[in-house]
Picture (cartoon, rainbow, N blue to C red):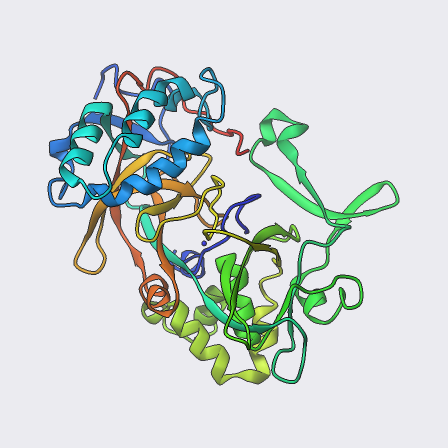
Length: 404
Protein backbone atom coordinates (compact mmCIF):
# COMPACT_ATOMS: atom_id res chain seq x y z
CA UNK A 1 0.00 0.00 0.00
CA UNK A 2 1.89 7.99 -3.73
CA UNK A 3 4.70 6.10 -1.89
CA UNK A 4 4.96 5.26 1.73
CA UNK A 5 6.73 7.99 3.61
CA UNK A 6 10.39 7.55 4.57
CA UNK A 7 10.94 4.06 5.95
CA UNK A 8 7.33 3.06 5.41
CA UNK A 9 6.26 0.09 3.39
CA UNK A 10 4.86 1.54 0.21
CA UNK A 11 2.59 -1.42 -0.02
CA UNK A 12 -0.74 -0.71 -1.59
CA UNK A 13 -2.08 -3.26 -3.99
CA UNK A 14 -5.46 -1.94 -3.10
CA UNK A 15 -4.56 1.63 -3.93
CA UNK A 16 -5.30 0.51 -7.47
CA UNK A 17 -8.86 0.07 -6.32
CA UNK A 18 -9.03 3.22 -4.25
CA UNK A 19 -8.84 5.45 -7.27
CA UNK A 20 -11.73 3.70 -8.97
CA UNK A 21 -14.08 2.83 -6.17
CA UNK A 22 -14.33 5.58 -5.70
CA UNK A 23 -23.79 13.60 21.62
CA UNK A 24 -22.97 16.63 23.61
CA UNK A 25 -20.48 15.41 26.19
CA UNK A 26 -16.89 15.67 27.28
CA UNK A 27 -16.14 12.79 24.94
CA UNK A 28 -16.92 14.87 21.86
CA UNK A 29 -14.10 16.77 20.13
CA UNK A 30 -14.17 20.50 20.63
CA UNK A 31 -13.85 21.47 16.97
CA UNK A 32 -16.63 21.50 14.38
CA UNK A 33 -16.50 18.04 12.79
CA UNK A 34 -16.04 17.56 9.07
CA UNK A 35 -15.51 14.58 6.82
CA UNK A 36 -11.77 14.71 7.38
CA UNK A 37 -11.83 14.73 11.18
CA UNK A 38 -11.42 11.57 13.23
CA UNK A 39 -14.27 11.57 15.73
CA UNK A 40 -13.84 9.38 18.81
CA UNK A 41 -16.65 8.40 21.16
CA UNK A 42 -16.11 6.49 24.40
CA UNK A 43 -17.20 2.84 24.21
CA UNK A 44 -16.45 -0.41 26.02
CA UNK A 45 -14.89 -3.76 25.26
CA UNK A 46 -18.38 -5.25 25.21
CA UNK A 47 -19.08 -3.04 22.18
CA UNK A 48 -16.34 -4.72 20.13
CA UNK A 49 -17.95 -7.37 17.89
CA UNK A 50 -16.03 -10.62 18.30
CA UNK A 51 -13.72 -9.37 21.07
CA UNK A 52 -14.12 -12.53 23.16
CA UNK A 53 -13.45 -14.79 20.15
CA UNK A 54 -10.26 -13.22 18.80
CA UNK A 55 -6.86 -14.71 19.59
CA UNK A 56 -5.74 -11.41 21.10
CA UNK A 57 -2.34 -12.88 22.02
CA UNK A 58 -1.51 -12.99 18.29
CA UNK A 59 -1.41 -9.18 18.29
CA UNK A 60 0.97 -8.93 21.26
CA UNK A 61 4.23 -9.46 19.28
CA UNK A 62 3.22 -6.62 16.94
CA UNK A 63 2.31 -4.43 19.92
CA UNK A 64 5.68 -5.12 21.54
CA UNK A 65 7.47 -4.00 18.40
CA UNK A 66 5.53 -0.75 18.39
CA UNK A 67 6.16 -0.22 22.09
CA UNK A 68 9.88 -0.77 21.62
CA UNK A 69 9.94 1.95 18.99
CA UNK A 70 7.66 4.28 20.93
CA UNK A 71 9.51 4.05 24.25
CA UNK A 72 12.77 5.27 22.73
CA UNK A 73 11.42 8.81 23.13
CA UNK A 74 11.13 10.87 26.31
CA UNK A 75 7.98 10.44 28.37
CA UNK A 76 6.88 14.00 27.54
CA UNK A 77 6.90 13.35 23.79
CA UNK A 78 3.38 13.33 22.30
CA UNK A 79 2.46 10.66 19.79
CA UNK A 80 2.11 12.18 16.33
CA UNK A 81 -0.23 13.51 15.04
CA UNK A 82 -0.52 15.61 18.16
CA UNK A 83 -1.40 15.38 21.83
CA UNK A 84 -4.84 13.79 21.56
CA UNK A 85 -3.27 10.30 21.52
CA UNK A 86 -1.28 10.91 24.69
CA UNK A 87 2.42 11.08 25.43
CA UNK A 88 5.02 8.33 25.55
CA UNK A 89 4.69 8.42 29.32
CA UNK A 90 0.98 7.69 29.03
CA UNK A 91 1.80 4.51 27.09
CA UNK A 92 4.64 3.24 29.26
CA UNK A 93 2.55 1.22 31.76
CA UNK A 94 0.59 -0.53 29.00
CA UNK A 95 3.77 -1.31 27.08
CA UNK A 96 5.48 -2.68 30.18
CA UNK A 97 2.45 -4.90 30.80
CA UNK A 98 2.81 -6.31 27.27
CA UNK A 99 6.37 -7.36 28.03
CA UNK A 100 5.24 -9.44 31.00
CA UNK A 101 2.83 -11.54 28.94
CA UNK A 102 3.68 -15.15 28.11
CA UNK A 103 3.53 -16.06 24.40
CA UNK A 104 0.20 -17.52 23.35
CA UNK A 105 -1.66 -16.76 26.60
CA UNK A 106 -4.82 -15.34 25.04
CA UNK A 107 -6.76 -15.00 28.28
CA UNK A 108 -3.95 -13.06 29.96
CA UNK A 109 -3.48 -10.88 26.89
CA UNK A 110 -7.19 -10.05 26.77
CA UNK A 111 -7.14 -9.18 30.49
CA UNK A 112 -4.14 -6.86 30.06
CA UNK A 113 -5.75 -4.98 27.19
CA UNK A 114 -8.96 -4.59 29.19
CA UNK A 115 -7.00 -3.37 32.22
CA UNK A 116 -4.63 -0.99 30.46
CA UNK A 117 -6.81 0.49 27.71
CA UNK A 118 -10.13 2.22 27.12
CA UNK A 119 -12.14 1.85 23.91
CA UNK A 120 -13.04 4.70 21.57
CA UNK A 121 -15.28 4.15 18.56
CA UNK A 122 -13.99 5.94 15.47
CA UNK A 123 -16.20 7.76 12.99
CA UNK A 124 -16.32 10.89 10.87
CA UNK A 125 -18.92 13.16 9.32
CA UNK A 126 -19.11 11.04 6.16
CA UNK A 127 -20.31 7.63 7.36
CA UNK A 128 -20.17 6.00 3.92
CA UNK A 129 -16.56 6.83 3.14
CA UNK A 130 -15.08 3.93 5.12
CA UNK A 131 -12.84 1.63 3.08
CA UNK A 132 -10.62 -1.27 4.02
CA UNK A 133 -8.24 -2.67 1.45
CA UNK A 134 -5.37 -5.15 1.59
CA UNK A 135 -1.69 -5.26 0.73
CA UNK A 136 1.08 -7.84 0.86
CA UNK A 137 4.75 -8.49 0.17
CA UNK A 138 5.23 -10.18 -3.21
CA UNK A 139 7.91 -12.74 -4.01
CA UNK A 140 9.53 -12.12 -7.40
CA UNK A 141 12.21 -13.63 -9.61
CA UNK A 142 15.40 -11.62 -9.91
CA UNK A 143 19.14 -11.76 -10.44
CA UNK A 144 22.23 -9.79 -9.43
CA UNK A 145 23.33 -9.41 -13.05
CA UNK A 146 21.25 -8.71 -16.16
CA UNK A 147 20.74 -11.19 -18.94
CA UNK A 148 18.08 -12.08 -21.49
CA UNK A 149 15.75 -13.28 -18.72
CA UNK A 150 16.45 -10.67 -16.08
CA UNK A 151 16.44 -7.28 -17.76
CA UNK A 152 14.16 -5.03 -15.65
CA UNK A 153 16.26 -2.87 -13.30
CA UNK A 154 15.29 -2.25 -9.68
CA UNK A 155 17.00 0.97 -8.67
CA UNK A 156 18.27 2.25 -5.32
CA UNK A 157 17.70 5.89 -4.43
CA UNK A 158 19.79 8.04 -6.79
CA UNK A 159 22.42 10.28 -5.26
CA UNK A 160 20.94 13.39 -6.87
CA UNK A 161 17.41 12.80 -5.56
CA UNK A 162 16.41 15.49 -3.04
CA UNK A 163 13.52 14.70 -0.69
CA UNK A 164 11.91 17.76 0.91
CA UNK A 165 9.59 17.81 3.91
CA UNK A 166 7.61 21.01 3.38
CA UNK A 167 6.59 21.01 7.04
CA UNK A 168 10.17 22.02 7.84
CA UNK A 169 9.42 25.34 6.13
CA UNK A 170 5.72 26.03 6.75
CA UNK A 171 3.58 24.73 9.59
CA UNK A 172 0.61 24.75 7.22
CA UNK A 173 2.41 22.20 5.03
CA UNK A 174 3.20 19.61 7.69
CA UNK A 175 2.85 16.12 6.30
CA UNK A 176 3.45 17.30 2.71
CA UNK A 177 6.55 16.17 0.80
CA UNK A 178 8.06 16.75 -2.60
CA UNK A 179 11.11 15.35 -4.34
CA UNK A 180 13.27 16.55 -7.18
CA UNK A 181 16.72 17.24 -8.57
CA UNK A 182 18.83 20.37 -8.07
CA UNK A 183 19.62 22.26 -11.26
CA UNK A 184 21.79 25.18 -10.27
CA UNK A 185 19.99 26.78 -7.34
CA UNK A 186 16.53 25.49 -8.25
CA UNK A 187 14.76 22.25 -7.41
CA UNK A 188 13.27 20.72 -10.55
CA UNK A 189 10.94 17.71 -10.89
CA UNK A 190 12.71 14.36 -10.99
CA UNK A 191 12.38 11.93 -13.90
CA UNK A 192 8.95 10.35 -14.34
CA UNK A 193 8.26 6.63 -14.63
CA UNK A 194 8.16 6.91 -18.43
CA UNK A 195 11.56 8.61 -18.50
CA UNK A 196 13.17 6.16 -16.09
CA UNK A 197 11.76 3.11 -17.87
CA UNK A 198 13.03 4.59 -21.13
CA UNK A 199 16.57 4.58 -19.69
CA UNK A 200 17.17 7.99 -18.11
CA UNK A 201 19.10 6.41 -15.22
CA UNK A 202 21.07 3.91 -17.32
CA UNK A 203 24.76 4.22 -16.55
CA UNK A 204 24.05 6.67 -13.71
CA UNK A 205 22.59 4.43 -11.02
CA UNK A 206 23.60 0.80 -10.46
CA UNK A 207 20.49 -1.39 -9.97
CA UNK A 208 20.17 -3.52 -6.85
CA UNK A 209 18.85 -6.44 -8.90
CA UNK A 210 17.24 -7.08 -12.24
CA UNK A 211 13.75 -8.59 -12.34
CA UNK A 212 12.30 -10.94 -14.93
CA UNK A 213 8.93 -9.26 -15.49
CA UNK A 214 8.10 -5.56 -15.98
CA UNK A 215 4.59 -6.13 -14.60
CA UNK A 216 6.10 -7.64 -11.45
CA UNK A 217 8.29 -4.55 -11.15
CA UNK A 218 5.28 -2.25 -11.56
CA UNK A 219 3.36 -3.98 -8.78
CA UNK A 220 6.44 -4.03 -6.57
CA UNK A 221 6.49 -0.24 -6.86
CA UNK A 222 2.93 -0.20 -5.56
CA UNK A 223 3.64 -2.70 -2.78
CA UNK A 224 6.91 -0.97 -1.81
CA UNK A 225 8.55 -4.11 -0.46
CA UNK A 226 9.24 -7.57 -1.76
CA UNK A 227 11.20 -10.78 -1.54
CA UNK A 228 13.48 -11.39 -4.51
CA UNK A 229 14.19 -15.04 -5.28
CA UNK A 230 17.61 -15.32 -6.92
CA UNK A 231 18.65 -18.05 -9.40
CA UNK A 232 20.66 -19.95 -6.75
CA UNK A 233 17.55 -20.28 -4.59
CA UNK A 234 18.54 -17.63 -2.06
CA UNK A 235 16.32 -14.65 -1.33
CA UNK A 236 16.85 -11.01 -0.52
CA UNK A 237 14.33 -8.48 0.72
CA UNK A 238 14.00 -4.97 -0.71
CA UNK A 239 12.07 -2.09 0.79
CA UNK A 240 11.06 1.48 0.05
CA UNK A 241 13.84 4.08 0.07
CA UNK A 242 12.37 7.12 -1.64
CA UNK A 243 10.24 8.24 -4.55
CA UNK A 244 10.51 10.55 -7.52
CA UNK A 245 7.96 13.03 -6.21
CA UNK A 246 5.35 12.50 -8.92
CA UNK A 247 1.74 12.00 -7.89
CA UNK A 248 0.48 8.44 -7.90
CA UNK A 249 -2.17 7.62 -10.51
CA UNK A 250 -4.19 4.37 -10.21
CA UNK A 251 -4.18 2.75 -13.65
CA UNK A 252 -7.28 0.77 -12.68
CA UNK A 253 -9.21 4.01 -13.07
CA UNK A 254 -8.01 4.27 -16.68
CA UNK A 255 -8.90 0.65 -17.46
CA UNK A 256 -12.43 1.22 -16.20
CA UNK A 257 -12.92 4.55 -17.98
CA UNK A 258 -11.79 2.99 -21.28
CA UNK A 259 -14.10 0.02 -20.82
CA UNK A 260 -11.28 -2.50 -20.58
CA UNK A 261 -12.31 -3.81 -17.14
CA UNK A 262 -15.82 -3.48 -15.65
CA UNK A 263 -15.80 -1.55 -12.41
CA UNK A 264 -17.44 -4.39 -10.49
CA UNK A 265 -14.66 -6.75 -11.63
CA UNK A 266 -11.75 -4.45 -10.79
CA UNK A 267 -8.97 -6.00 -8.73
CA UNK A 268 -5.22 -6.27 -8.72
CA UNK A 269 -5.54 -9.61 -10.52
CA UNK A 270 -7.79 -8.04 -13.18
CA UNK A 271 -5.22 -5.34 -13.87
CA UNK A 272 -2.41 -7.86 -14.14
CA UNK A 273 -4.46 -10.05 -16.47
CA UNK A 274 -5.18 -7.12 -18.77
CA UNK A 275 -1.54 -6.00 -18.86
CA UNK A 276 -0.38 -9.56 -19.62
CA UNK A 277 -2.89 -9.82 -22.47
CA UNK A 278 -1.92 -6.48 -24.05
CA UNK A 279 1.90 -6.35 -24.27
CA UNK A 280 1.77 -3.65 -26.91
CA UNK A 281 -0.11 -1.28 -24.61
CA UNK A 282 1.36 -2.47 -21.31
CA UNK A 283 4.16 0.11 -20.98
CA UNK A 284 2.08 3.10 -22.05
CA UNK A 285 -0.65 2.20 -19.57
CA UNK A 286 1.84 1.68 -16.73
CA UNK A 287 3.41 5.03 -17.62
CA UNK A 288 0.09 6.73 -16.84
CA UNK A 289 1.30 6.39 -13.24
CA UNK A 290 4.33 8.72 -13.20
CA UNK A 291 5.22 7.85 -9.59
CA UNK A 292 8.38 5.77 -9.28
CA UNK A 293 9.78 4.09 -6.17
CA UNK A 294 13.41 3.49 -5.21
CA UNK A 295 14.51 0.59 -3.01
CA UNK A 296 17.17 -0.62 -0.60
CA UNK A 297 18.12 -4.11 0.49
CA UNK A 298 16.90 -5.06 3.95
CA UNK A 299 18.35 -7.49 6.45
CA UNK A 300 16.49 -9.18 9.28
CA UNK A 301 12.75 -9.37 9.70
CA UNK A 302 10.49 -7.50 7.37
CA UNK A 303 8.91 -5.87 5.59
CA UNK A 304 9.34 -2.60 7.46
CA UNK A 305 6.36 -0.30 8.01
CA UNK A 306 6.17 3.45 8.43
CA UNK A 307 6.73 3.16 12.19
CA UNK A 308 10.09 1.58 11.45
CA UNK A 309 9.19 -1.89 12.73
CA UNK A 310 8.74 -5.20 10.92
CA UNK A 311 5.13 -5.78 9.99
CA UNK A 312 3.17 -8.78 11.30
CA UNK A 313 0.96 -10.69 8.89
CA UNK A 314 -2.77 -10.17 9.58
CA UNK A 315 -2.05 -7.96 12.61
CA UNK A 316 -0.47 -4.83 11.10
CA UNK A 317 -2.72 -2.10 9.72
CA UNK A 318 -1.85 0.87 7.53
CA UNK A 319 -3.79 4.03 8.38
CA UNK A 320 -3.87 7.71 7.50
CA UNK A 321 -1.00 9.06 9.55
CA UNK A 322 -2.45 12.55 9.53
CA UNK A 323 -5.44 11.18 11.51
CA UNK A 324 -4.00 8.26 13.50
CA UNK A 325 -0.91 7.62 15.60
CA UNK A 326 1.53 4.80 14.93
CA UNK A 327 1.48 2.00 17.49
CA UNK A 328 -2.16 2.37 18.51
CA UNK A 329 -4.15 -0.89 18.83
CA UNK A 330 -7.22 -0.79 16.56
CA UNK A 331 -10.13 -3.21 16.63
CA UNK A 332 -11.55 -3.75 13.14
CA UNK A 333 -14.86 -5.20 11.96
CA UNK A 334 -14.49 -5.56 8.19
CA UNK A 335 -17.06 -6.98 5.77
CA UNK A 336 -14.65 -9.27 3.94
CA UNK A 337 -14.31 -13.04 3.66
CA UNK A 338 -17.08 -13.80 6.10
CA UNK A 339 -16.00 -10.97 8.37
CA UNK A 340 -12.64 -9.86 9.75
CA UNK A 341 -12.95 -9.06 13.44
CA UNK A 342 -9.63 -8.78 15.20
CA UNK A 343 -7.12 -6.61 17.02
CA UNK A 344 -4.67 -4.85 14.71
CA UNK A 345 -1.79 -2.45 15.40
CA UNK A 346 -1.37 0.76 13.39
CA UNK A 347 2.17 0.38 12.03
CA UNK A 348 2.11 1.65 8.46
CA UNK A 349 0.70 4.32 6.20
CA UNK A 350 0.43 5.11 2.51
CA UNK A 351 -0.30 7.78 -0.05
CA UNK A 352 -3.62 6.16 -0.97
CA UNK A 353 -4.63 5.77 2.67
CA UNK A 354 -6.60 8.94 3.24
CA UNK A 355 -9.42 9.43 5.72
CA UNK A 356 -10.28 8.68 9.33
CA UNK A 357 -12.02 5.35 8.65
CA UNK A 358 -9.55 4.01 6.11
CA UNK A 359 -7.35 0.98 6.62
CA UNK A 360 -5.01 -1.22 4.62
CA UNK A 361 -4.79 -4.77 5.97
CA UNK A 362 -1.35 -6.42 5.74
CA UNK A 363 -1.84 -10.04 4.68
CA UNK A 364 1.79 -11.17 4.73
CA UNK A 365 4.13 -12.42 2.00
CA UNK A 366 3.76 -14.54 -1.12
CA UNK A 367 1.10 -15.48 -3.63
CA UNK A 368 -1.56 -16.65 -1.15
CA UNK A 369 -1.36 -13.33 0.68
CA UNK A 370 -1.53 -11.54 -2.65
CA UNK A 371 -4.71 -13.37 -3.62
CA UNK A 372 -6.42 -12.20 -0.42
CA UNK A 373 -5.06 -8.67 -0.62
CA UNK A 374 -5.72 -8.01 -4.28
CA UNK A 375 -9.47 -8.53 -4.14
CA UNK A 376 -10.03 -6.71 -0.86
CA UNK A 377 -12.11 -3.53 -0.96
CA UNK A 378 -14.69 -3.62 1.81
CA UNK A 379 -16.57 -1.45 4.23
CA UNK A 380 -16.02 -1.74 7.95
CA UNK A 381 -15.68 -0.09 11.32
CA UNK A 382 -12.86 0.59 13.73
CA UNK A 383 -12.34 1.27 17.41
CA UNK A 384 -9.14 2.70 18.92
CA UNK A 385 -7.67 1.42 22.18
CA UNK A 386 -5.95 4.20 24.13
CA UNK A 387 -4.26 3.97 27.54
CA UNK A 388 -6.46 4.51 30.57
CA UNK A 389 -6.50 8.21 31.40
CA UNK A 390 -5.96 9.45 27.83
CA UNK A 391 -8.94 11.46 26.57
CA UNK A 392 -8.48 12.16 22.84
CA UNK A 393 -11.23 14.78 22.94
CA UNK A 394 -9.57 16.93 25.60
CA UNK A 395 -7.55 18.65 22.87
CA UNK A 396 -8.41 19.49 19.24
CA UNK A 397 -7.51 17.12 16.45
CA UNK A 398 -4.81 18.60 14.26
CA UNK A 399 -5.80 19.15 10.63
CA UNK A 400 -2.27 19.14 9.21
CA UNK A 401 -0.13 17.19 11.69
CA UNK A 402 3.50 16.19 11.29
CA UNK A 403 4.31 12.75 9.98
CA UNK A 404 7.87 12.18 11.01
